[in-house]
Length: 297
Ligand SMILES: Nc1nc2c(ncn2[C@@H]2O[C@H](COP(=O)(O)OP(=O)(O)OP(=O)(O)O)[C@@H](O)[C@H]2O)c(=O)[nH]1
Ligand SMILES: [Mg+2]
Image 1 (cartoon, protein in one colour):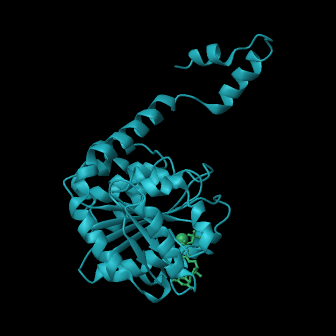
Image 2 (cartoon, rainbow, N blue to C red; image 1 turned 30 degrees about the vertical axis):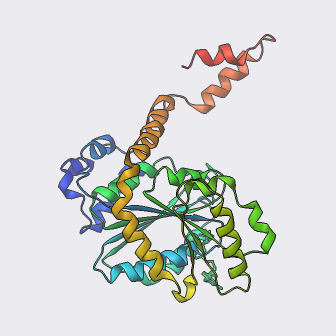
Image 3 (cartoon, helix red, strand yellow; image 1 turned 90 degrees about the vertical axis):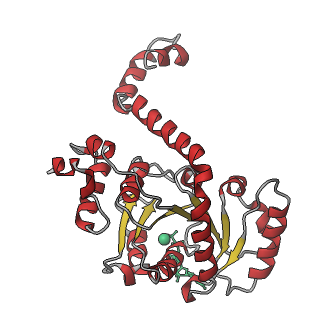
C-alpha cells in the first residue's frame, strides 16, 4: 500500500524492496507519490554522478568497474540506467544487465533500468524524482547512465552533481565535431577504449580543445573499462569532486525547480485533445496559433 511510505525513514538503502516499490510509485505516478516525495528525508550528501556518452562508448562497462572499486570502501551504490530505446526493444536493457551482471545479486548495489518512453534522447519524465528517492534512501553514490543522444546529455548535467562524458578514440580530425554543449557540461572527460591505437592522439587533441576553454578546465582520463584500466583515477576524481559538489547546488536546484514547475504547468494539457482543438480551429482560415495558445496559459 502506498500509504506505507508516508513515514520517510522507511525508504532506506538497506531495504531494496521498498526502494524499488517507492521508485515504481514515483515512475507511474501512483497514488501516494506526491506524499512520498514531500516526505523524503534529504539529510544526506549522496553525490549524483551522471555518466553520458555516445552509444556503445563503454558506459555500462565503466560503471561496472567503478562499482567494483567503490564497493571496496564499503559503499552502498545505486545505479539508474536510462535507456532511450522503445520499451518494445529490450536489446540495450538486456545489454546493460549483462554488462553489470556481476553486481545484480549484490546486497550493496541497487540497479534499476528506466526507459525514456519515447521522448527520444530526453531523460524520462520522472528522472529527477527517482534520483531524489535514491538520494534520500542514503546510498553513498548514485550513478546515472544515459546515452548521449539528443538533449539527454545536457539534461543529465542539470540533474547530476558530477557529469562524466565518455568518449572513444576516433580518427584525429573527428574531434572537431565534438558536440559544443559537451564542453560546458563535462566535469571530466573519459576516453574509454584506450586500448585502441588512436587513443593518445585523441586525448592530446581533446586536451588542446579544452585548453582553449575559459574557466575551469575538466580533466581527461584514459580508461580501458573492459579491463578495469585507469578506473582508480576516475574513482579518486569522483570522491574528491563529491566533496566540493555543493558549490553548484544552487544552480542545480534552480534547474530542477524549473523543470518541475514546467511539468506541473503543462500536466493538464492532453495532446490528443489539443490536436482535436487545433483541428477545429484550423477550419477557420484566419487561424492564428499565437491567439490560440493564449487559451492555455
Ligand atoms: N576494446 C574495448 N572495448 C570495450 C571497452 N570498454 C567497453 N568495451 C566494449 O564495448 C562494448 C559496449 O560497451 P557498453 O559498456 O555496453 O557501452 P555503453 O556505452 O554502455 O552502450 P549503450 O548503453 O548501449 O550506449 C562492449 O562490447 C564492451 O565490452 C574498452 O575499454 N576497450
Ligand atoms: Mg550501457
